[in-house]
Length: 117
Image (cartoon, rainbow, N blue to C red):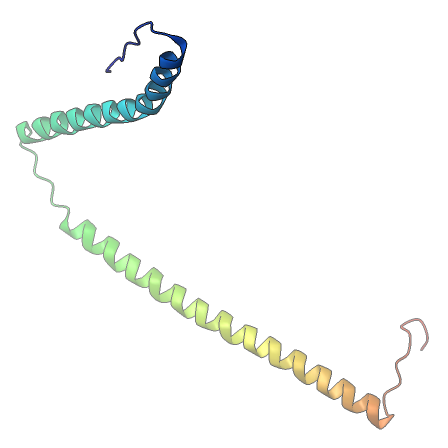
């Protein structure tokens, strides 16, 4: 990991140096992590090249793609059904309000409390 040194200077310059150090330190740490990651990937690639085992992943990739396609299809069907159900519920609520209003205006419907038969 890279280290940054701060030289003792007057207090105003110290604050600037500390501020710059505070700004640069996370970037340097992140860069250091990336360097380590690249080294690990290079080492894994080197190990992989030395191994003579050949893995045929195509059938598994095809199975995963097929499963993904089916999941997306089922998801679309469920979304469409949910949207139709939402619209139906909305229309039922509108119709209920319309009929209730119509019955109240015609006088055939008199609201009673649930406790009175």
